[in-house]
Image 1 (cartoon, one colour):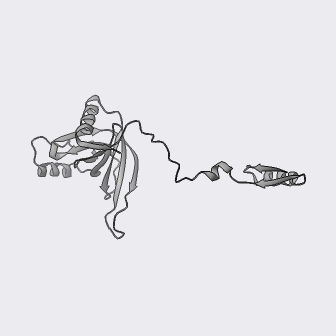
Image 2 (cartoon, rainbow, N blue to C red):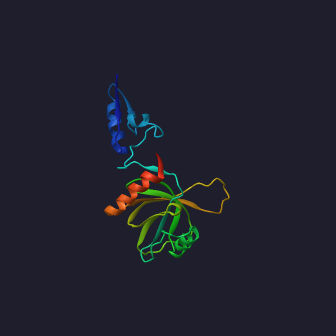
Image 3 (cartoon, rainbow, N blue to C red):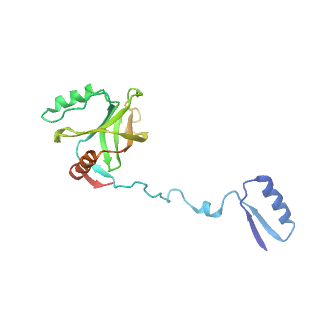
Length: 189
């Protein structure tokens, strides 16, 4: 006895063909999904990483700063940590937080969610104050912004993770990103 399987999404067509075939000497089974799809366990199938460059964990206390284009760049050279902190505050950043990982294509950083974001043009700066490293005016595209689970269920502070992709960095900016990765990042993610 033959066994026929139907994988048609149209319910009336399936029932019509099943009734016709069941009159003959066939065992008819109607299925909504392909047997192959039922065998796949989504938890064990992993997608390939679509990134063109390797990502690296950042070892030092490096920060990403998203600020309006109209705000002045921060001067880091020959400044104390307090002066740098005041300059960051005066730049009125939209987001400011510790960098998690970086690649030649982009980075991700954690920040504390606060005020609503404006509609101004924004740029990204990378700051490593204790080493005097400052990379300013990177244009970027936001890839995603997700909530980070806190260790405490009643934590009033809302922490988020922001992922960005660099857009058209200049050759000088590319050299500084390479320098940053070589000197201030550790193992590959």
